[in-house]
Structures are given as structure tokens and as C-alpha cells.
Picture (cartoon, rainbow, N blue to C red):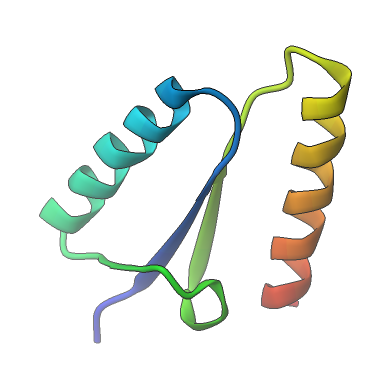
Length: 70
């Protein structure tokens, strides 16, 4: 059975591009990408923390994702 990976991208457009690259590499290596975080075996949160509000949003999102997988 294929492992499912979900992605959450926060921040600048470069993060979206980076997430697309990671998703392509994972698909190439046999992983299934899912838009549904609840059905994902693993959730990747791609973010940055250059400004304080982004740091808070990142931490909150990571904690929410961790709760889904707890």
C-alpha cells in the first residue's frame, strides 16, 4: 500500500514552488500525494519564519497538523 503524504504550504510563493518540487520527488518515489490531511500518513508543513506573525501562524499550523496525527 502506498504511503500518503499531505502538504501545507505557508508564506511566500517560493514555498509553493518548493512544495511542488517536493511533491514531484515523492510521487516519483512511489508516494501518493493527498489534499486531505486527515487521510495522510505524513503531513509536511512547508513554512518560513521571517516575521513574527508568520512564526505564530507556522507554529499554530504545525500543532494543528500534529493533532491530526496524534
